[in-house]
Image (cartoon, helix red, strand yellow):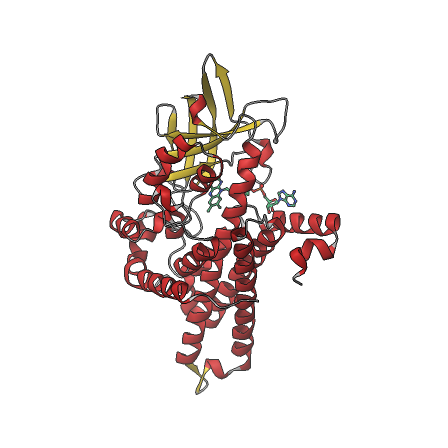
Length: 390
Ligand SMILES: Cc1cc2nc3c(=O)[nH]c(=O)nc-3n(C[C@H](O)[C@H](O)[C@H](O)COP(=O)(O)OP(=O)(O)OC[C@H]3O[C@@H](n4cnc5c(N)ncnc54)[C@H](O)[C@@H]3O)c2cc1C
């Protein structure tokens, strides 16, 4: 069993931690204020190749493995949460990699890898969140064209997006599987992006409503097959859950780092507060959560790299890592006392930023439902021990 990161990935991690400290963190105030990411920061991230994570080298990306991608995302998770919505691999790039034709890959992936085009993944609607099969956006065949109508909510990066991955019902007789098709569209007439949502945390994530009104698409814009949308979604959501877990591990790690430092600096009753057992207990719980999160995360990432489909492992990683980040941020606020509530300090932002991760890409309870069903259906031995590891 191999648990150590190779030296090359240790360097990637350290370089990105420096990038967060030197280039991203100093801009956190502006990001909070404007609810947007400065162009200069996006340009620096592009120069470092951060938009090309997980995109194959032949299409201009860095071709990183899932383990390497998670190392990078964990490092980026130490900074403002909203930035990791842009400077991260995207679901649309993953979908094009998985289901795109050669023409679609050549058209979109190099621009996405350079950061020249920003992609948005448009699935959620007013009546369809966890229940993705409940979408109402329709793509209707008219002659040799598709005409798309509908509205999508909470779409990250939408404010800057130039490429839209949209799920639409093409066969209303079939709910979900077989009835939904994914289209990949460059910005065109019929697509309108609303004003930026103001969310709890993740400032600058570019979240907005995206409306499609008589938006025309051709067969060349279909990603995968007509009716094959749920296969593409399954691929996207597996990767998105892994990447959300990695960002959450970064947040958990940052919460512990800030708490250890503060416990060593703050003196009450003539002692550093880190000497009080009540504080030590919190630090110990955070450390165990961080360690367990990392094991779950990198185990799931390694299984993806072996071309396995670790549905169970990725749901467990998503559930545990994002919940652990929430617990860690909460304890970090407690350890910081009133300072933990001050907008002047990072721990307050961390507390807000990490909240979204228990909701996006499948809520914690949705992950619990999938984990339990899998254990019930396949039995504990098979569901929890692929390859007989455990
Ligand atoms: C920061 C952020 C970014 C996002 N970015 C995107 C994006 O880029 N693209 C996109 O398409 N969407 C995006 N979303 C939307 C996100 O995917 C949805 O919010 C998520 O799927 C949950 O849907 P919902 O908010 O409608 O909650 P609901 O599905 O209405 O759930 C409400 C509550 O009911 C629970 N619940 C629902 N069904 C069940 C069940 N069967 N069993 C048990 N409990 C259940 C949920 O766990 C939750 O607690 C984003 C959301 C956020 C917060």
